[in-house]
Length: 322
Image (cartoon, rainbow, N blue to C red; front, side, top):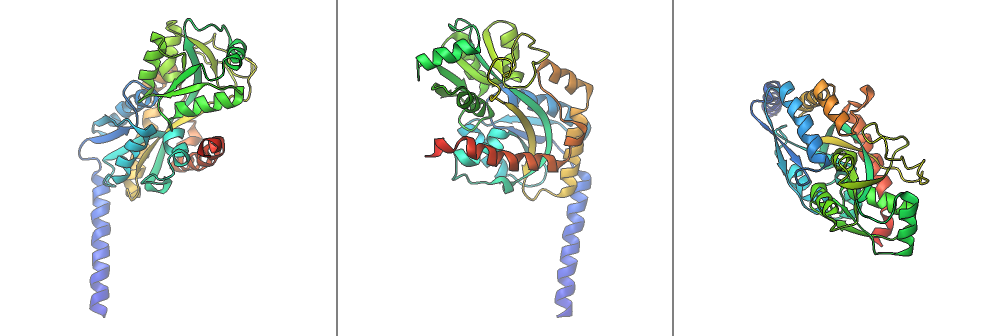
């Protein structure tokens, strides 16, 4: 019996030493960051900005892989199945990593399938319209929508995306009936709004602000308590007469369950270095996006955001599930 116990303890010690050595060597080659949407949207832009600086901190390239479909659940299914060795990570948001559990109740993964390791960005939701839409401000838009129930169509990045949640939050706050049109990402939806194929989009400032500034679409409102420096003419929801519309979101990084704590610590440190870099701060300013505060870098902060938003969007989307 003693020899069996000794062999068992030796095996445990050997496994621990191997894991520790692996973590110390990490990373030895490139890392894949899965983005749950098509290229060009908010999550994709933020992922590329952050990944570039994380690569510098880690000394290895981070390769972006866009996996669109099912509001992000296709991508996160792949991430959940990945080897928990730190070489596959994913970027998520309140849609893909919280609301999705209400929208798609039979997913092959749960919040516990991932290790949240870093908040990397805080975002602001915007409603923008095709430039020739017959409403000059929010109150005119709401009045028009109430006179034409179901006839206005707003595009988003797919059911379950953060943009979909922006749409739902806006429609509920305004008390209007509009048609929501899902796309495989924010960029295709914005392209159709610019072309006049749809009436408008629910999007984050990171991907729609340039089009607003270039007058390709007409900004209607930002779901924030204050105006954005990059869009000084776009009213915040409270001043526009709709304080109930709040659309401040987040982007965070996740690894598969079972990823060693030592590797999680290295990834977290690299993410923190990235978002504190001047390169990321400057790019985020251009994108009307905010880096996390000094007290928001710990992995536990992202875990708490996921827990909070799972419940928040379960209530918001309750009517959709009836």
